[in-house]
Amino acid sequence: MDVFAWIVLAAAVGAGIVGILIAPRLKRHELRRRLEGGGGALGGIGAGFDSVWRPSAEDAHAHWEAQVELPAPAPVAGGVGRLEDCRIVIRVDPQD
Image (cartoon, rainbow, N blue to C red):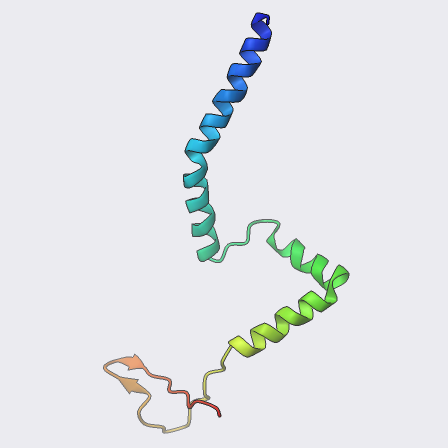
């Protein structure tokens, strides 16, 4: 093999080693970004494509969100028991 082939081989091996070494840091960064709620600059484009090309997936996601989200009860004028130890307390009665 000539010198150029050895250089290309060394660069490929080096890039593989660097990729393996920084993979955990990239994974932590991705998890942190997701937990903060950032979808990135292109995050909303996927939802737009889903609504056009896969409307059943969008409907299923909307149905799931409706089941997971629980609306807070509306405050009652003059209601008592809303503040406990300077914290707002919302009690939700379980639905049978």
